[in-house]
Image 1 (tube, rainbow, N blue to C red):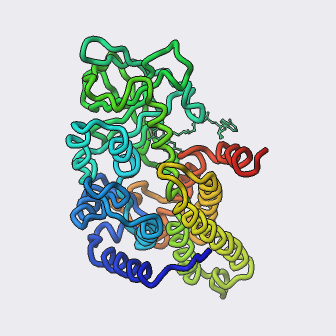
Image 2 (cartoon, rainbow, N blue to C red):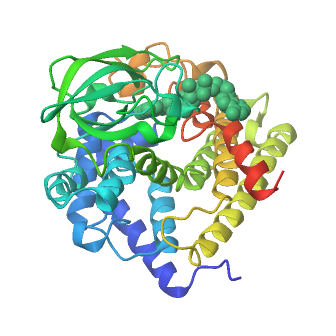
Image 3 (cartoon, helix red, strand yellow):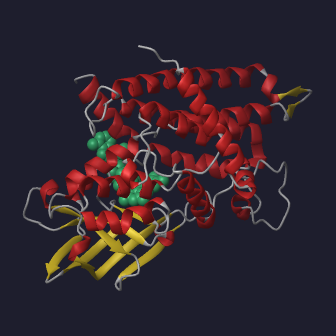
Length: 400
Ligand SMILES: Cc1cc2nc3c(=O)[nH]c(=O)nc-3n(C[C@H](O)[C@H](O)[C@H](O)COP(=O)(O)OP(=O)(O)OC[C@H]3O[C@@H](n4cnc5c(N)ncnc54)[C@H](O)[C@@H]3O)c2cc1C
């Protein structure tokens, strides 16, 4: 098996790299370099630049704005985006609801939604998790009752990322409470402005507002917003969650953090010696780098194998990528915490957004490091928690 890139793939990598260098707006580039958060406007601006180039939804079919890249070029594209570093296109739109509509939506739904999803004219959020239904998602209770030509939705979702930014939600609801758990679930598209829908913020330890609770109190949703067939939503959700795990190892993002930790460790002195030259730090850095290289080779193997799999079938090894990839993302943020030391905690939370009114205590690059460390703890929970990935590895790879 050849794990090296071909000359054509290397040429493609250079083209992508040059595009990111030229097209990423300076203010977004600066925020990314300092580890600051992107506003809704930044994410929309960047996705529209990508869409104008034909690269916002490269994995979609060509007729809906995609490319014919295949897995290797898609991987190169993602890695270059993380190394630039440039913001990801909105995953809820491009990796989740978009591909579900391509595969299972009606022609009318495709025409109505797909172009706007690609161009981020509408922002979707994901209404899956509920209190008591996270890893065990099939036990969800939010109900939808068909009354004439509307579903009437009641219940609650939780951990809904960026629901406060969203125009629409793709939502799993229970339409048959008598059927076996997985069989009574449907997939609805819900306009966030519908009366009876309330979004309540949840603030996290990194000082941000990522999450929300969303409450439904007799929310009336036109029946035409049902995707596919009633009570088949679990099939569509499984398809979607498979897509959520694609690229979840985020190797480019870990490489970027490690490179940053090295550069900064050369500037931080421990007595007369730069931190980066101390034996203890070098040893820690080497462990993370070696493991990342091993993961990269595993990633290449998974990509090479995926060329032989039927469309939509996931290699169980993607669970290894999720597990190890998130552990290494967390390890890289720990290295950065060590470099920043006590300066990692911001004296003003606004550093995270680039809107602080005071100078930071310590170097300009430091105050976003603790928030990044904190939010990266979440990587081992979303997209199927790491314990669940271990269950998959035990069952489907090790046959236990
Ligand atoms: C950053 C982030 C963003 C998110 N965004 C969204 C979003 O936009 N929309 C949305 O719907 N959800 C979202 N979620 C929710 C996420 O999908 C759930 O947190 C996740 O599925 C875990 O569910 P839970 O929190 O209910 O934990 P639980 O399922 O209650 O798990 C609690 C603990 O028990 C372990 N556990 C559970 N079952 C097993 C088992 N069978 N074997 C071994 N261990 C087990 C878990 O690994 C975990 O450690 C987000 C979560 C995070 C962290």
